[in-house]
Image 1 (tube, protein in one colour):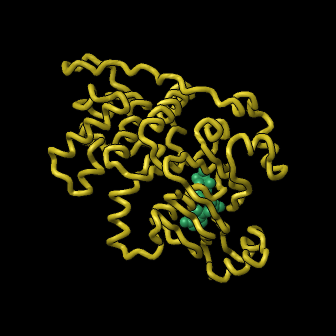
Image 2 (tube, rainbow, N blue to C red):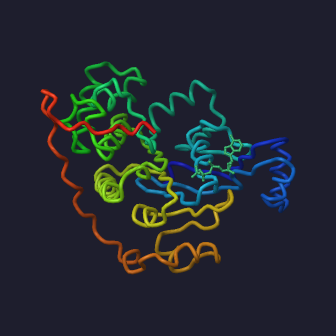
Length: 301
Ligand SMILES: Nc1ncnc2c1ncn2[C@@H]1O[C@H](COP(=O)(O)OP(=O)(O)OP(=O)(O)O)[C@@H](O)[C@H]1O
């Protein structure tokens, strides 16, 4: 069953956006619209995300991924089309109800972690619960459980800048998991990490997913990451989804030359025989409170 559905979504920036949508429906190209001062950021996006599925939206910079994601959580109103979340039309909800859905049922994990430097790891992990108005005691209990899931409960009294980039992103993930949201929206969540750490985070996400079975929309510009994580992948180009399917479908039957060129260098054997998940890397022990630990730079991007 699908938890999330994008139904003919359009987002046009600039003058007379509704007219621009009509023109796009009649076959106008993005370039033609641009000549008139409009940007067609998302054009006729249709897809469904099932319960327990990782759905990856992959495309180069400017292809419309972030704009699409912002429509999925109601932060940006579509110019046309609907977003359905658990059967409810998100795009038609009054602002107060939309905020409730957003704070209780949808969580975001950002590229630059978005941790508060003056809050402890535990307080950061509990932030979404605080926003929901949950009692402090329950916040701490559930945040500790979520930190446990990502292997960081020993670090709960530390400050974000005592953690490496990968560990900070684990806190970001714990914050999203603590709210027990049904849908996780992950916007280039691992793109700021070093390649090895990034790989570890991908593996940890896959491991957690085996246990938690969330619905996840994961945005990336990295094809290998898309292939590794996605149960299904939507490939975007110039605002349009040019193909969606499983990694194997995309590798074996690319919809056009653009997708074919994209997947040319992919390791087919690995994609077709998708290897089992390896254990995530070890997390080091917390620093001593006497300040002897090496303090690592916070990525506040
Ligand atoms: N608020 C805005 N006003 C005008 N144009 C916008 C706005 N937001 C995005 N765009 C344009 O819409 C198009 C899609 O942008 P978007 O940021 O969604 O792409 P993206 O795939 O997420 O790229 P990136 O990976 O670089 O963030 C781009 O041409 C961008 O310049």
